[in-house]
Amino acid sequence: PEDYKKVAEYVCKDKLNLSPSDEFLNNITAMVKEYCDTRTDKPSLSDMKEMDNLIIDWVLDVYRNFHVNLMEYAQNISYNFYDRYIQMEYDGSTETHYSINKYDYRYQDNPFNINDIYERNKHREFVFDHKGELEMLIMYYWLFEDVKDPDYWPEYVTLCITNERVNLASQKRILKPVSVSGLDYPSEITTNIKFIETANGILKENPGANYILCITYDKMNADAMWKDKDALDIMISNLHACFKAFGAPQLLEFISPYSTPDYNEEAFFNKYQLFEKSMRRYNKMKIAIINGHTKSNKGKSYLYSTIEDIVRLRNTCKEMKLQLKLAVDLTDRSGKNSLKSNIEDMVNTLATMRNFILGLHINDISSWGRNSHIYENDKRHEYINTMDYPSLSMLMAGLSSVLQDSRERYFIPNHVKNSDALEILIDTLYRGGCYFESGVINLEEERN
Image 1 (cartoon, rainbow, N blue to C red):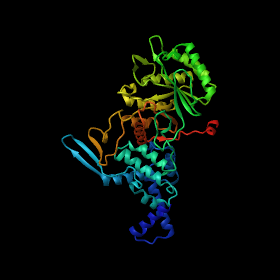
Image 2 (tube, rainbow, N blue to C red):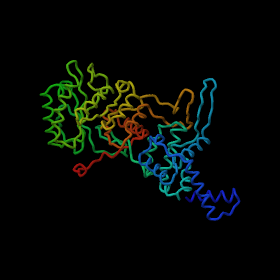
Image 3 (cartoon, rainbow, N blue to C red):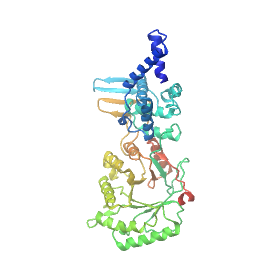
Image 4 (cartoon, one colour):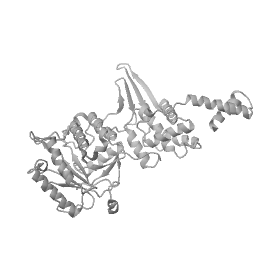
């Protein structure tokens, strides 16, 4: 209301050269309000598809209560910087337009002069204490419309939340680090969750209170537990003895069995149902299958390795109402991971089954898809940044989409070759907007 009155006073004194009566000023104020109401469009949900729900609610509440479209305001500010810092060039030989950005917007304390914008508007109750959220709206339009740099958005949002620049957003892409023997995490990442492997269900040493147990296959018996009832009974018996001695793990994993001419999915699920039933007493323990990360292993094909296999797996688990989940194995050695054949299809499919994914095995990201210095190329219009910002590989950009929820998932780097490679991998995940939750769990938390 005070803004409408200020506009009315300006019209009367500066445009009409009048000293208005209170009644006349009130009438002009009402006309200003009516004009603004008819010119202000409601914020579109389609323009906020990458926004946190809490920020969307804030934008809609402000429009509902004050008839102010914050998205439109942010878009106008973003365009002002576009007009000032984007240089347009045209190459007639290729009929290509170039948008060349000269504004340094990444990792800035005061992007878009947000401090000044906030100071000028903090008297408005819907802006007060929301400087970070207002900055986020401007950055949203800048990245997605003006410079076509969606790569930076996940990392930017995570940094805003971690550094407490915003109040109305929740952390996403949360990874819970798991300790692997021989690997050291960077100092800022802490965990006491151990990764333990067993081929027979027997542990010779106490794994500690918090661990993940992975059933692997030895050369002698391979995946016999899924093909022979006696072998399955022995594995179950050994696991019960192990859990009695040391406590059950947080997560029990096993690698996909091999496919043979006389062994199919029906045979696997017949055995798995028996296995899951035998583990029901451990009500806090989760069970996950790991997809085979290569198309074949020494001539043997995995029952579940391709994205089509994973879709069938998930659908069957839903139909049979099983508790089985998936630990996605993105380990890549010499380009042999079968999920790498069509990264776009893999990403789109996994994004539809986020609640089916419990963990992530990965050893490298940079080799999955090419990096590019251009953010978007429609063959006739290229967007280029003079700051030489690093871009994300196809896999990392895809993972940002797949992990875009508030669920915690285990990060298991069991195929990373050394601590230096682990640090590089984690830095890449940071740039993709991932957040590493503390993996330190105390006994009191376990009891609760």
